Length: 309
Image (cartoon, rainbow, N blue to C red):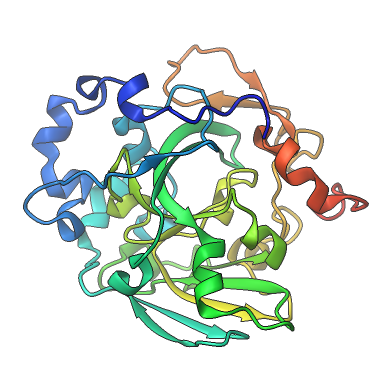
């Protein structure tokens, strides 16, 4: 592993709880953090083990992570998801797993989590909009779930689809994107140990605005690849369509690997603004593959990453 991982780092070691659980957030309750639907009366700790894959960088505050994000199903403003995501009912959530698998079917969240080795993964997050965070996810490797369903030899890609509930997701009433939101990975990307399905944040159940109850996290890619509120996973032999590529293929490629050398058509990707650093914080240089190159670069050997962006 690259030298910047630590195997004993948990959020409690780097960020005192009082620093992120502010009075404002306590007052917000389930309406603001949207935790109640999955956490029940008590916000019990998930008890996730620390991971050697975690970065040693300090995570952002809970307020940063839960009030500044993109989830267009709940609105296009950065704070819209925290205001509106409480409308999403995650009770009884099910995930359909289909396509080129040995055991297709519909899984409850209990089924998904049964036997899953939950870990805390403190990952860097880089948005295609050139801002970044450090997020302490709780989750398990997607490869573990795929092994349980049995990937057939002809499978080359994994396609994902999020929920589409206009009554609960007010943003879907507007044609910002084609709904439902879809994403996809090449099979080797999906099977990589850095790729996780997240079910928690700061060792507590995942808030709705961050993709409850199940979201993808692929830390070396721009954030829009990490699809939220997954309801369907399909193994396929063809490259699946992805929402932002459908909307504008010139600006958003299938791979979406963080690459400071390939500018977005409307802005540079060479630097990024770290959220939480203050209004006048200096921008920092973006690193290829968001700093995970030692672990993932080999998957793209020989590829023209300026063309296959």
